[in-house]
Image 1 (cartoon, rainbow, N blue to C red):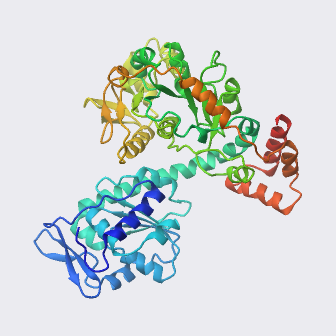
Image 2 (cartoon, helix red, strand yellow):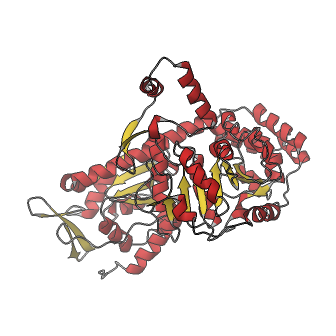
Image 3 (cartoon, helix red, strand yellow):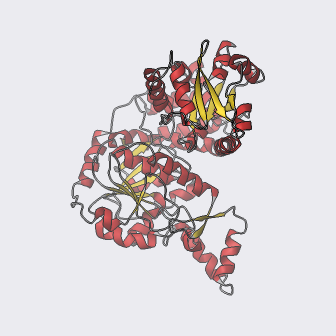
Length: 546
């Protein structure tokens, strides 16, 4: 690519690498389409971008005077803490915000990959990116959009700005960007609501689990443990009833990574997972693994905030992790008790997938991952939830199956989407969100092969093949060392730390300014949904069992 003046390929590489580190992906590099856009030499700016109109005219993308246009665009935004820009162009709006001393965080949507490439070539944006003030999503796919909800703060609604020229000349592309932006904001609002409802539980249960966290192993020890070994990530969708037969046949050929909801169905089908992953802190969720006997050769990879009952059956076989660096993890890290991170996107299956990546597994196959109500069923057989579903069927023995289904879904938000065979199937917004996040990750450049062996549902798109477990594992060698390697990793991941029962009791007293400030910080993390007395009680309880 030949670039004029200050526009350099080296600058593209620097900025793209910064974006890759900051948001996990970088925009695709592309050239302007000669029939719809062009770069015109400009003595002052280096180049000026122009768009071709539907009546065959050329109009400047950033206006006849880009600096004046940028000043007008950002004037109402300069005091906003967070801005969503649709139509970044060459980034003159960012220049103007910078000149005015604005510290706003900007999430930019640029529909045209070629325009984004030229923006990345025009100047060094690394200070913006590395300080957490700029994230960039590029059309038409806007890869990485699902992850942006964790970056967007909707406690105060973000300001919204759309390029006038782009809206007038490229209305379809502009609307596409606006739709994705609305989805990001919606996901961010859901995250904020979840924080209000669950942050107190995260904090108090993590404190209650300190004896487990401090005695058991660090999930970071699992990184690269099974490089090149096949993995099967198992979800509790209706299709698992069929998949479990093949899993039973080939379970000694791959690492079986089971969502906690699938433990009972797998055991009922003769499959003993190597790893069970748990991330949901609800007491109900702990019941999927609590009270299950004979798990002496399965290992729990559990988020530190799980309900304490989830850990009981895995004593001596637990790796703990965190999903983000929220409280009280910074304090634990300061005492040499930090734990590795697994990503989570609203579902345990996303953390199980991330674990497979971190283990170094390839190929990674999926079973029971319908992400839809295949056959109008919510779950596979033998889950706790399926028992509830069967109770509903029994209680409605004078109804047809269709009547029971209609009643079950009457107060649930659902939609119909074509499944991987093109047949309409019922699904729900959270399931689509999980699907979109998984597809975003699998679409990234990678040497890992991803195969959906579910046989139904909605997991299809760029980056994931459709196949069967027989296809993936039939020719794979027997792996008889997987459980022993997990045992060795567990021993290696148990580290010394500076947390003691006496230290917890001292912290609970809150006698020093630093201790009182820490307790206040923890309370603020919960959005004041817990009292200091709740935190103190959790610390006393942990100290008594440490």
